[in-house]
Length: 434
Image 1: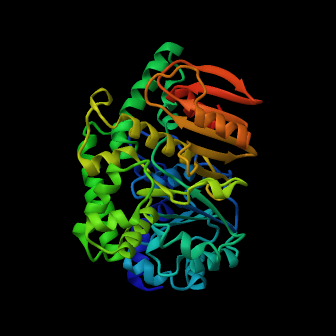
Image 2 (image 1 turned 180 degrees about the horizontal axis):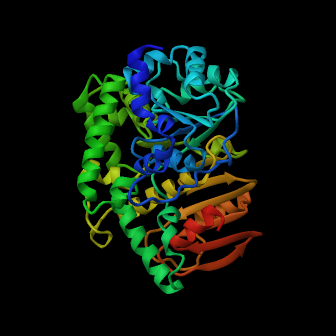
């Protein structure tokens, strides 16, 4: 092993040489306030000779989550930060890496590769590691599905468990409310919701007293700069204009030609920039949910941000909910993010329903054998089933139809379908099955 590589491994994995320091070293990896995470699809314990790949946007808590799961496995853990050029060069050969790891740590209990998207062939490297049977779990984190998921989907078939870790859900930030009275717990969850639709739920922004500054730093330093560095944005002004345009049109149908005209670039370039933002987990282009009556449905996707705080940071709009003219859009975008955090990306179906005649249901979710439809209304609604809801229920026969609103809980039945009116906290509980 090269001397400089050995020194870097020693510096980044001090617990291997000083085993008694493991508790302090582990604690140094954890934030002062830890919010427990439960990504959908997580299986415990991590499986030997398999890869667990945790992807998601930068600063969403991937590293913290992985380290929280490693506490009882230390100190027999080796961590490699693939942002380091020396480690990137080392990781060209899985056989060399595993052989030299075994010299340092004959019986590792876990191998952790952070920011693995920086490897030129991340999928092939991870495949090579598990094929060599290291007799322990191989864990990897990555912030960009463009570099990680797209290249590993085929090569890791049957070898990997993929977890998508997005910013906190309402359920996750409410982890510390269980000891409160029901009335106080409901009040706190309402406060959390009001904050979340304005400032989002990126961990650092959520836990900070200066969320605006954190969001601006995140937007500029990670989303704009990283995208420019990784994907070579050749029209940065148009890229920023497109981002602002998207932020003003959450919940709308995508119109690439219109965006191209406004931004002064080609529709092909707009499409590429939109793909970059989607691969970086900034936005999602939600596709229509298609039943057997495909010809009646629109084919264009709708646009949502994966975090309300980032959306509001793009527009520099941090007004309280009571002083906003876009409250309906914020509620709808929040509902989208909560659903996204509750489903299994590779197994569940998620889209919207909109006929060419204009009848629309905001979200349709196929999850665990159930079909659930959701419409979002920011105000308080009477327990009345609207025309679009009736059309969907009578044509599609979902298991459940939910109206997310600001009023009381109501329950009815229509044509054998259970129909609920729920507030945000109850909606979040429904999504998680609690």
